[in-house]
Amino acid sequence: MVASELTANPAAIPEKSLILLTGATGYVGGRLLRSLENQGYRVRCLARRPEVLKPKVGASTEVVAGDVLDRPSLDSALRGVDLAYYMVHSMSSTGSFEETDRQAAKNFVEAAQAAGVKGLIYLGGLGSDDEELSAHLRSRHEVGDILRQSGLPLCEFRAAAVIGSGSASFELVRALVERLPIMVTPKWCKGKTQPIAIDDLLDYLVEALRIPLSQYRIYEVGGSDKVSYADMMRAYGRQRGLKPLIIPVPVLTPWLSALWLGLITPVYARIGRAIIESIVHVTVVTDETALTTFSVRPVGIDEAIRRALAHEEKHFAATRWSDALSSSGKLQSWGGVKFGTRLVDSRTLRVAAPPEVAFKCIERIGGDNGWYACNWLWRVRGFIDLLEGGVGLRRGRPSSTTLHVGDTVDSFRVESIEPNRRLRLKSEMHLYGRAWLEFEVTGAGSSTTIRQTAIFDPVGLIGQIYWYTLYVPHQFVFSGMLRGIAQAALQEMSKPQPVETPLSA
Image 1 (tube, one colour):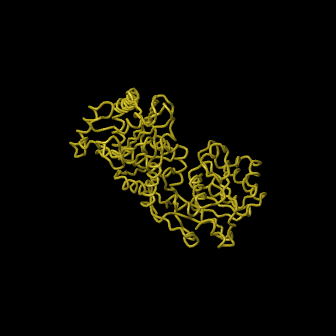
Image 2 (cartoon, one colour; image 1 turned 90 degrees about the vertical axis):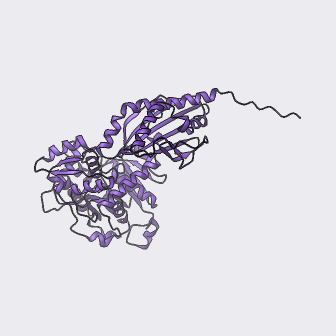
Image 3 (cartoon, rainbow, N blue to C red; image 1 turned 180 degrees about the horizontal axis):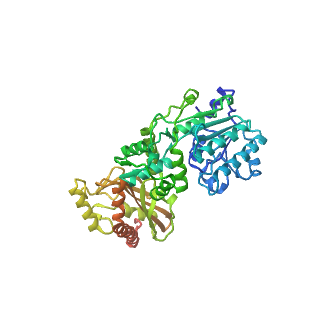
């Protein structure tokens, strides 16, 4: 369905309605923004720092300044809005996040009532109100109650762990499995939950725009599998070819577990503790009304993880490192940058040569021309790869000075190429992971910045050990290679150019 189909349901909001989205800088809110834009909805985003969000939104999306803790700032933001998404929580803030969430929700519903908003959509958390919930889940439910008590129609979705590249739960599971082949886990790893793929959750959130306001109520949503966090770790391992050994123990308090997660995973200890305290509760769907109200058919944990990794792969393939890293003219290196599970070494150097000359030198790399630096190290590594049954360096490269997608360059294969701009090579050696080498040239006239980026996607702890063991040799190889390319470009410029002589009459 698209926005134009709203007219098929006269009880839903009108086709041209203005939708306010809060939390667009967060994980779910940011993904929801793209879904709404792709389906043609009129969206206004509320942001405390509009200048940060504006470059990330579509041309038709409006970004306004406002803060849910600043009641007067909400009046202009909600003016003319028909329906609002409330995607705000303060779990990572200092102090009492419960009191902060409580006040924010009260401010928002007061402003929404004054502005004549017709309905609200809210994302809360699963968990039974009949038991003593964790502070995080209790606050999620309390916020839903405050929004509902306003008298405005509220569509509240209650979900457990969200599985998607970048979500806190997924990154926690990923880091544990990738870094720890053997895990001593506390009892919270055994608690049952019903994780949902981010794509399925987004479908629910968007479809809420198409149902009658009279059907707004609490909807429990989850994937098709009821699993524990230990099951989720094993499922992630299956996708990555890893078999984590999980040993449960009866000790480790949530506080100690959170500190441990803060050291091992990218999840902050405060957030980790909130997750762990929630995990000890059973967070599964007990009311399946959502399956009869919406067309969404959620996938299981294996497919959710596969989608998360595939989405990351698609995003990675479309990424230009110059968009994310500094492009200063000085030689710079980032050895600790991460993109998902990938480790990145990126460096730049400016050379006094046109972009086409610099790219010409890059395109000659490999084969008899060598790798511009430390060729003996390349040969040693190629020989080791041959002993392991790999391709080594014996394949060489095309005899021509140009490359095309699919060409071999020693142990690499050309994955993508944009003439005079960008070349990406994918390694086909036997490695403890996957590796790419990318070159990009930018500039105009006689000045060019060459960016050289090595990307490694390690598999498990052994893959990370492999990368960091070679950290020092990589510094010599990568810096020498970039300098060699720059020097070759300068030498190319110093060659005498052929002089055209006019034909005699």
